[in-house]
Length: 392
Image 1 (tube, helix red, strand yellow):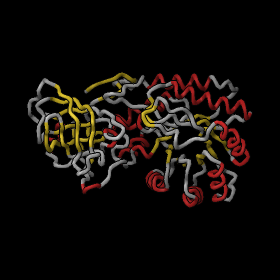
Image 2 (cartoon, rainbow, N blue to C red):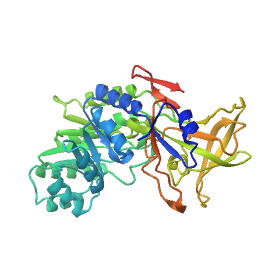
Image 3 (spheres, rainbow, N blue to C red):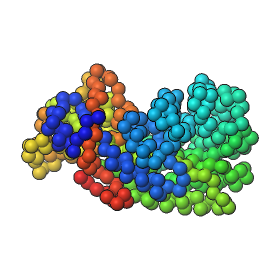
Image 4 (cartoon, rainbow, N blue to C red):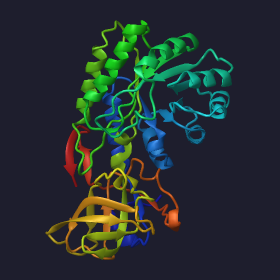
């Protein structure tokens, strides 16, 4: 992988015609260190967030050796590169063939579920194995999340009680898990999730061996500035104390976005300017999905490349390179008023899902990935590794 000091060097040296994706390993180190030092349990990196080999290497070498996997493809990827890593099959809806292959061929014993039907599939395909660790995922409010996952996953309270009792009969270890939704903007959601677990414990008299806090830990965007993650951790600890049980179960979590979002960015080129509309060479079918449908306002900066920048800042919206009018990013993206065709822009916070969502629609696709050592446009970390909003 090519290495560059900063994004200016990338543009000066490469003068790229196609988008260039940048990875900052130092940001993965900072976020991994934070979770390793502060979370009261084990961290499972959510592979779906960014499965790039270089990114996975940074996660693994910075002390996170457990992985939340959602498919056989992800299982094969992790097993190939990190044979000593532990994997948890945390997708609640799995094909019978995938369950069987995961258990029989890859030694995976940790499975998530939210229905009796899924439990029966797991038992059938593993021949009612006695070494299964089963996690009942319960539905909790996603009211503070930018992406609501509760409509698709999670057993309702009325269903969860019986499912926990049933899993207790078949599991070597039983876990209860929840997910507050992606990019959760209020720490109280974690306390509420733990309160739901408290109710289940009270009604079933079953204390789980493991509590899975799930993911949803946020990153920072131009329009989304959450509290420091230290506050989220404090709220989780408060929720655990509120369980009021003599000995706490093992605690795990599944962060993705909070681990890798800051590490990735994309350098795009302006192909045309129409007043406040910029037509760029990447879009919602490429690395910029988050800027499209969910309308995340990604941090943006013009890369000077030796040209002076106007002090007047203008709000722009973007159009991607495809012929589809859905390839549109509302923004607003604040950039110097004198930006024009041929200029380059860096768009940040794309370490999470930027690479995952790319397609080859219309033939527009770039797999040019480089390592860069400068600071991201926005960061929640200062040089001490504590949270403190920084703008490069």
